[in-house]
Amino acid sequence: MRVAIIRFPGTNCEFDTQYAFDRIGAKTAIVWHKEQELPRDIDLVVLPGGFSYGDYLRSGAIARFSPIMQAVSQFAKKGGYVLGICNGFQILLESHLLPGAMKRNENLHFISKFQYIKVVNNSNKFLSQLHRGEVLNIPIAHAEGNYFVEPKKLQKMYDNEQVILQYCDQNGEYDNPNGSVDAIAGICNENKNVFGLMPHPERACQKILGSEDGITMIKGFFY
Amino acid sequence: MKAVVNIYLKEGVLDPQGKAVKHALGSLGFKDVEDVRVGKQIVLKLNASDKEEARKEIEQMCEKLLANTVIEDYDIEIVQ
Image (cartoon, rainbow over all chains, first blue to last red; front, side):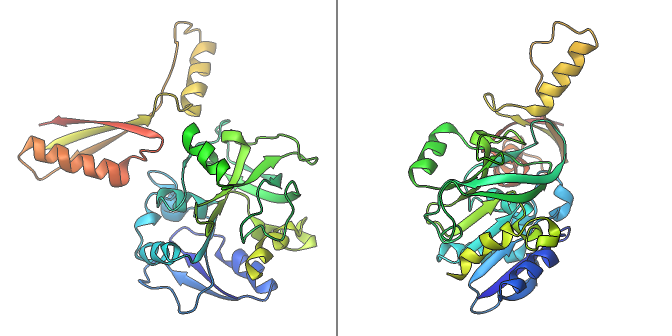
């Protein structure tokens, strides 16, 4: 599997992400945002976490207009797999490749901690190797992760199994660290080839880091 | 030409900052505050002469970049 990891000014999770994908045997390349094209024969594009453009205006609002994002958008529209983690998720929302928007966390704090999340839907490539209801322990680290989408659109997303991850407690019961609608932690687009999640699977890819659940997640792209 | 763009969360979208400010005002003794909405203001200087054309252009700026219309509304004020 060949993975392109996009780096914007202010991105800071590109090497962690690369490390995680290297661990599962992927061939990875970090691609600077000024590139006009993606490398050839890419299977997956990852927009990693960080603070692209210093989060000015709104998180992800300016990165969206980087030259590489045109190529990413075309890649996605042709059915290519795209994964946005944290700030990457915010960029995908601002790019309208995913529905909804992010607001400041309900408690206005930057939240950085391990958080349990559960699989809501696995009818997609990313989570295909996990069971519905499976609980994972993955770090979150964000100030704007309060996911919002209007109720009508949300219903459509449920109907189409686009709500893929929810925050929860250790037992899979309701928990909501940031005020997101229905405690949503991750979603995908209608065609189920573009994914976004606030938790950082790349930070949970080795026992010594406290959890290996992140590896279990990203492995899905291999199958 | 100078233009002022005000951007704020849509009615019905819970505003966490507004809520916190309202709470703080309440604890300072300002009991009459019913609601607070926190937004942002963007001031633009434009090299333009036609007000209506400028307004149209700023509308495009808002739709494309300045506001996220999924959650935000905006209003535009042209001040000479």
